[in-house]
Amino acid sequence: MQYKISDWLPTTAKEVKERGWDELDVILFSGDAYIDHPAFGAAVVGRIIEAEGLKVAIVPQPNWRDDLRDFKKLGIPRLFFGVTSGSMDSMVNHYTANKRLRSDDAYTPGGKAGFRPDYATNMYTQILKKLYPDVPVLIGGIEASLRRVTHYDYWSDQLMPGILDSTKADLLVYGMGEKPLKEILRLMQKGVPFGSLTTIPQTAFMHHGDVLPKNKNWQDLELASHEECLKDKVKYAKNFRHVEEESNRWQAARLIQPVGNTQIVINPPFPPMSSKELDASFDLPYTRLPHPKYNKKGMIPAFEMIKFSVNMHRGCFGGCSFCTISAHQGKFIASRSEKSILKEVRAITEMPDFKGYISDLGGPSANMYKMEGKDLKICERCARPSCIHPNICTNLNTDHSAMTQIYKKVNKMHDIKKAFVGSGVRYDMLYNKMATTKEQESHKEYMEDLITNHVSGRLKVAPEHTSDAVLKQMRKPSFKLFHKFKADFDRINKAANLNQQIIPYFISSHPGSQVEDMANLAVETKNLDFRLEQVQDFTPTPMTVATVIFYAGIHPYTLEKTFTAKSKNDKQNQRIFLFWYKPEYKKKIESLLKQQNQQELINKLFTKEKKEVYFSKKNSVNSSNRRRRGRNN
Image 1 (cartoon, rainbow, N blue to C red):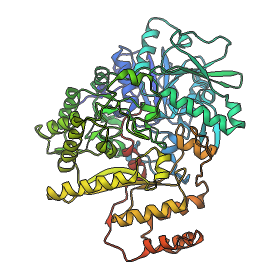
Image 2 (image 1 turned 180 degrees about the vertical axis):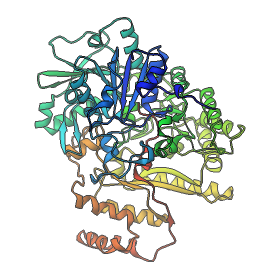
Image 3 (image 1 turned 90 degrees about the horizontal axis):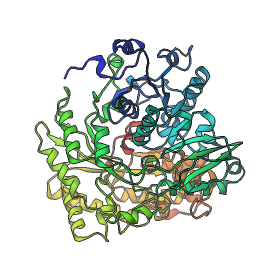
Image 4 (image 1 turned 180 degrees about the horizontal axis):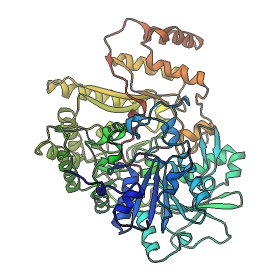
């Protein structure tokens, strides 16, 4: 299909003029290049605004270093400016776990770094507020969402106040933004002033008066103030628990946190999107391509990674301690209809460079599609951050039949040679002892179909560690289940005469992990014939359990003291065990274990080795993004 420049949302004054527009209703600023695809939040927000009959333009990756012409070129919008750092927190995008500046950016043409500032949401908003102090600014996206209350910032090594305080933005949308955005637009179209938008669910604002806006359906929960958190790490940790629990409730409280002489007010979230609502978001008229302005500037790695993939659902009920998916997308699964998914697959087959292979039929986790509580009234009362840890909820329906059915239908479609599952598989659900007979049968069928028909040669799973104590801190299942899954994987491959591999992910330096735990991990993976490359060092990111432990030194739920490797030396001493097979680390590993009188572990690790499986190392940003599959708008 041949597209015209007007098929994309306008990005320049010339494109706006060519549409015959004299004024814009909303102007969006994003830290990402503009890719008109449902996997990229700025495109989705722009298309929603357009669908409401409004005039919208996007300024992607504006230059903040010059005379600020990018912030001036489209003038003043009638309603508001919208700001997002992009699909990633800008600091995660810029720096490694060791705080080294990355040399690339997967969301920029050519993968070039340097096209967005540190703390991009802050920078963009502060510039707009300086240039246009009377124009409202609405912030959203993962950076704003996860920094909505007092949070630990790893890169500056300090507690920072909620981002509304530092940006002076007028309103914040947290989580997946379609429903609150539509309500904002509906009210503004009725003439409601922006400053009066104080009772919309899933938004946050700064309140300067004594009397809070009323909503008879909401209860209020006051958090410890930012100043109290600065003085007392226990209060900071307790705050986090309140925020996480209320974010995972259907009937949540309104959160209020004092900051100086003001208050940050966080309204409860909307209920999860229905399939019809989610389909409508994915069915907007995307070109599914980067804006033509990038045609001669090189490929955009993040787009290349997902352009032949299909996101089947949103949300993740795993609740992993180190992961931000449930904090941003929520624990309740919102699934697209089969019709919508198959429609997108057909659209992909019509792309000119499609070769017949769908790279991923997945989501934030590969196998949570259509899963929800058997009795939703129980879910409405539940505050558990995870539906599968410390055990799989007896109310959770883990039937995999809907996924298997879609996999089979896609594989039978014309022009499809193979549809792969590239998202990480939660294998623990496949061994749910409390499942019904029907569910257990669906688990077996899913596993067989997945392994024989939808693996591209390598299947990604994320055990993350081998120590049960560390896995408990991570909210992950026992490593015994990985052994069980690997045995089934090998059995099915052998029966089908396939030569495929499991790609396991592991994390070093996670809270609770000691040197001895990492040594045992090395021995365990050696015995499984793995030589690891798909690994990462724990990076503290805002609004995760693990980050709270890293900063406060205590678990926010138990308030028990918990060890975390913090110094560069301590972190390196854990990481080297993931690469025990490299000769340059042998002496250091032996020295560390001798200090702990662990000669037995030395013997296990460095006796004559079996033939290990090699895994190729991939770009760290892309690998991280692949694991966090799913759009963050």
